[in-house]
Length: 391
Image 1 (cartoon, rainbow, N blue to C red):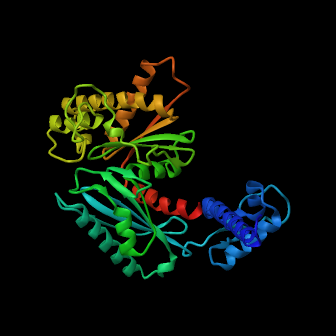
Image 2 (cartoon, rainbow, N blue to C red; image 1 turned 60 degrees about the vertical axis):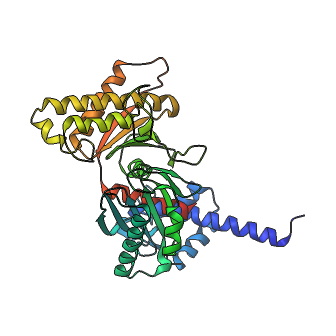
Image 3 (cartoon, rainbow, N blue to C red; image 1 turned 45 degrees about the vertical axis):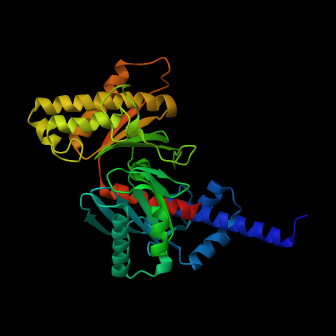
């Protein structure tokens, strides 16, 4: 028998769910805003319920009506419906990306605008605890400088290197930072900062950001390869980052493309990453960043650079074929530190796809490239916080 208390709790849960759903739609509408009538259409909620929710959100300082010259367009005669948008200063999120080379941090307002950003280089051979302490210091420095009330921060989104276990909130393994194995970075940060912390892999955060804000024709199923100091990949399907049955992020750089290839730092032979990192040795770059500086060599007609990129595209295409069989993405994105390298890799793989069609192929797959951007990574990390808040 259901008690009155249980009914009250259930009603409270439904009310909170509806409020977050409506607020999420207003947030998604951006600067153009959205009207109550449009929210009624999109949610199926009754007009009085939506009216009450809008009133509550406005009284709580989360939303505000926007001026006439930025109202949403309407074909109806008479007064246009009043549109609302979120108040930028109502809430804030912190996005962090870190890896062996550096930590980047960005503070975003509720409208998703970056209001402050910074970067801290990391010394070679740094340990996991030391890197985490630097993140804590950086967050404290930024929050003190901005002087935003603590209750306005929704939390910290962390885009971490290596494989991440989402359920355990830890970095499973990242060999380029000492002792970063089964490392509970989210718990440490949460305890030290007194904020909610949301952890994912850095490639996943970049993929999420590119999926939402990159403007690509991806059909709601985009697989992104990040080519930086190594190679990784992430699949965003229907606006959600794919994770494995064991709650871990993908390790696409360790897809085997040969049974007996070069030894990888993971301990196996023939991984995609082992082949890709080997190209830096051939090019003699002396850099930990894959294909760094190759654009200038391509423009100069350097044969070794052209050959290295052709090889990189072939290695990646071997992994792409495996990804297609398992996930069926409708588009691929290659994010590189080199603009021309990314564009060339994308073109070559698109051509190889056309030349090597399979009876299992289903429809057209688009291939895109983009230059790595710290802002893209930080925005994806910030969205981890927003997704949790609106869920």
